[in-house]
Image 1 (cartoon, rainbow, N blue to C red):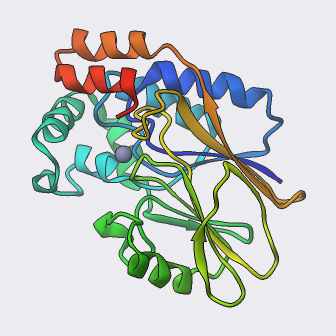
Image 2 (cartoon, rainbow, N blue to C red):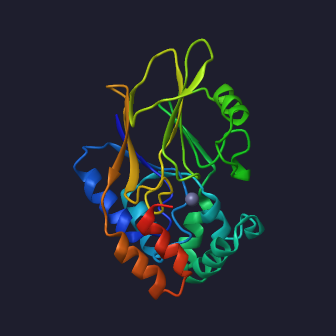
Length: 242
Ligand code: ZN
């Protein structure tokens, strides 16, 4: 099975369409969306439609739930909160129902997917810090978990002796006796100072995970945000990957 796994589209249609085009060439079997289809960007309706059309397995992100009042915007910064208010006004009943139905965790024989952390998936905490990572690895019973939320791509591995380290490359061959947490980065708002869209391919036959980058028209995405009347910073940050 070849999975295309992506997260944090954030209503960036230009990045989402680039992702879909690229992944058509990847001979993928299944798509997994690790949350935050909406929020920040100018095209929430179109991005929901694209994810629905892919028939992707999708879990909830904090922005998805905040847009349908399932998560408090008090925990958002003012710009994010402003974008959530705008997003809520754009959505029709079907789109709201779609976001409302998203579950916080997905699991099958190959993988687990959660936007934030497994210990409290509905709190949307960040998979950051030694103790959080260790606790989540202990909870993991599928060998590999895909996360998003920080917008920072990263492969964390724990060997059979329990040692945890950050894998130094964008790709890894999975070992039978190790556990992995893979942050798939962000399609629509990367924050690792690389403005390109980010996604991940997981090949279960080859036991390989590869984080990939993709050029897209970030200038057009920025212009859409500003034309929609959303905060200028939310557009400008796309050009710098911050
Ligand atoms: Zn996000």
